[in-house]
Image (tube, rainbow, N blue to C red):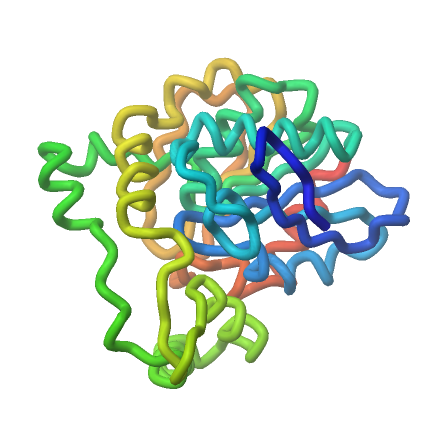
Length: 262
């Protein structure tokens, strides 16, 4: 489904169970990721309509010249909710998507019945690095021009032996496969860095006091979540888990999300 969120900007939304009558779920991917990584979770949310959104320049969505920051991403999600006429949804965001959905909950509270933060939603880059320059140097994405899809697929299988084939292919889809099995970024490096800069300038913690919905924080591995300021939060850790928990443990993550249904 295509949803027009602004002048000349349409987002791709993957829809599951559109005719289901349960509380809707809105699923949001992380930086340089895509909505397909939620497919396993969505399949396990039977009985509920599920909407997984590709943000700007991600997945199959449009790539306008502007709007690469957390605030605009939250605005886009609010527009998706408006245009689809969704009742208050259970909203889940992974990694940077967690930061985005915190803003959605704080600024558009009527859209969010409950919030799930999947190894994100507490990412505060200015607290992790001594300067923006150090942050940018460390987190600038690598060149992918010398890598083929076949090579990347083999690497993902080796490093994530417990992932199902759909999750490997969904991860490949973070990039566009071109002639000769070549890869290119869907999200160009300059736009990636623009989003990172917004994460530096606009962390989620100042929005916490404005979040009225109950929150489930789901950190992976040894991640420490700075959740001070959230009024109603529970933590469900996944020790040893991958950052992409929704790809690694889709059934368990879906069960966690279903636990938020009123």
